[in-house]
Length: 406
Image (cartoon, rainbow, N blue to C red; front, side):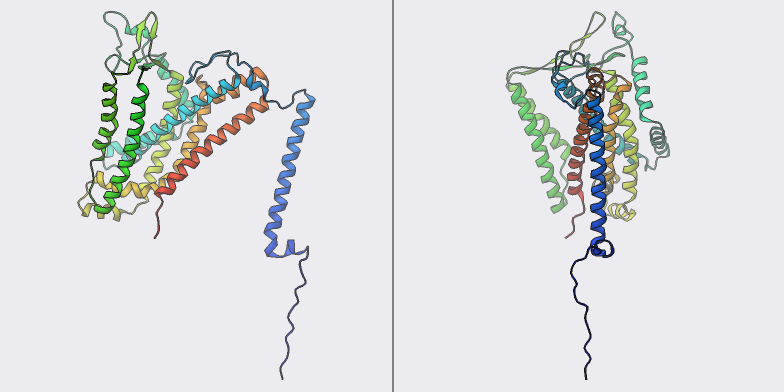
């Protein structure tokens, strides 16, 4: 005789399941949190719009097309006081991107060199790099920016020091570069007919270098043979460009700076505020990158180095071919954060008078127009887009160096 076992019948969906059923509870909490966030955001936006309306200030971005009525001393594109506020914001953005780009390059070079040298067996070099890293990391970056500006303004010679039969200061690089307390004057290119072809060949040379390096890497992985990439890359970069340059009759000239009157004329002037900001941000961020590089190298097992030495590889080859390629997987993620920090720290340019995005759109333009909210929103959006662009580019590179499993 068998006994039937009653099975519970499915009673359908009940509202109580949203709280007590683990299948729905997490979704319920997320929906409630999202609704609460949207309610708070809507309240803040509505409250802001109401307060601005009571003050007679509606949200309006039309001020961007009004004349800026102020000058910008350091600029990469044409601009004068009659240009629009939008043009002034573009000049400030380009100044920010210029410092960020140059800063990321110099900070990476300084950080990699300092990080590797901190692991040197030479006691003096190792300790000097330790002093550099600890000194720069533990002093606020704005102090380094101001201190660098003070050094450039006070320690460098005045233009009049280059004058006279026995000048106390002299120009560099065959009298083509003048470093003064007002700024650094470098040669400026003069574009003549046919110069576009020289530039095009130079860009194609860069593409050829990239293709050659990929080929050399695949050949190395397939055969173990190492090509002299440095000299070949150097030849690819300069030989075609110089050949076209001379065949076209030297279409690109140089406007050299020369002392005329009380200051240098001609060439391109790199103002001290930009140099101070660039150097301070680079060496400050380089100290953090040095620790990232050091930790990445230490994360690689010593057995890797011992195996490379057993195969007869020199220490330099071991570092370039064995250690650093593996350490990149550890180095790149925190390196992205340092690049983002350097870009955002460039907003401290106001401390030395460098007119970047913060000083133009978030400074003079905002004060002249009285459009605080609009300027802040635009500036936040621009910094967000720039940061996301940097992060996306570095994440693509990070995926290319990740360990690929079979």
